[in-house]
Image 1: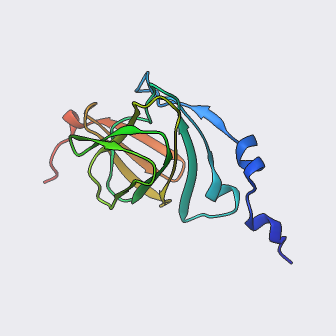
Image 2: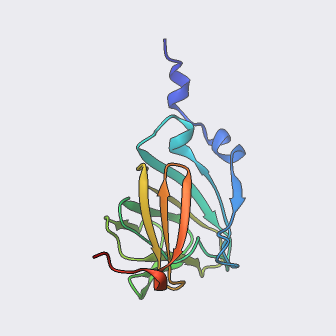
Length: 156
C-alpha cells in the first residue's frame, strides 16, 4: 500500500529542503530552491521552487533543444532576457519556452526577493546552448559534456 502523505509536500518540508546554489559560469548567479516534483516522485516532469536575492541572477543565459521549460513569478520583479530582448516581469507573469527554445535568463532588479516556480521536462538526453558564452552542453542521463561552439564542424 502507498503512503498517501508521500503525495503531499508540506510548506515546512519545502522550507527545510531549500539549498543555495549558483552557476559556475555566472559569478552573479545565486538561487535558493528545492526540487519539489522530484521529492514527491515525479520523474518526467520537474517542478521547482526558487528564490533569487535582490541584485542576483538565475543561472546563465541558455536555450534548450529538447526539454520544454516554464517560469511563473510568485513575488518580486525581474528582467527576463528572452531571445536577445529584455522584459520586465512581475507577480502573476508566466513564461514558457517550448523546445527547441529561445535563450532566456532572469535578473532580480527589484527591492525584494524574486520568488517563482519553474519546471519542465526531464528527458534522458538534453542539449543546451549558452549563446553569450559560445558553449553547448550535451547531457545523457547523469553524464554532462561541454563543448565550445566555435569547434563545431558540419558533418559530411
